[in-house]
Length: 212
Figure (cartoon, rainbow, N blue to C red):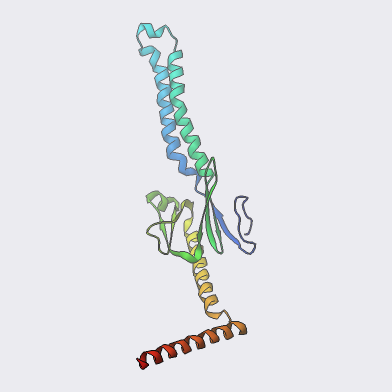
């Protein structure tokens, strides 16, 4: 799979391995609270006029309906905002890096070089273990905490396994490249000349010390 999203800018030889996003179902608690709140407001509007005093009954529920609508707006906005925040998050794993895109009003892209990753951890709560979702945390070398989180992933175990494979591959290539990179003839001659100059300088210093 090598289809690249519009927000992602990668090198020409960098291959997209996996793409994902948080579960939209993560907004269900917010939606449930908002639904309960709106239901309570509707009940208040329905019962209110019958329970109100005579002066209030002169206004056939208009005041209560208006107040209920105003109080319901924050709940609707909270659900809409939670939905937008969730659907505007995306994850991409390539053979070199892991990316996280977020933001509703503006776009922010975070990147982790796989060769610098020190450890990964997968966290599943009770519901995550039951329905197979969790949060994958990534920490880099020299970091005191978590550098990047892929939250609320469905079926996260294969993602972590693939990421770990790419991390191991990236490390081995880095070590191999450093160990087997050939030195051309001109560079070797330069290094040899520098070594000879250093040795001659050391010999002169040693002679000067012994003559004192």
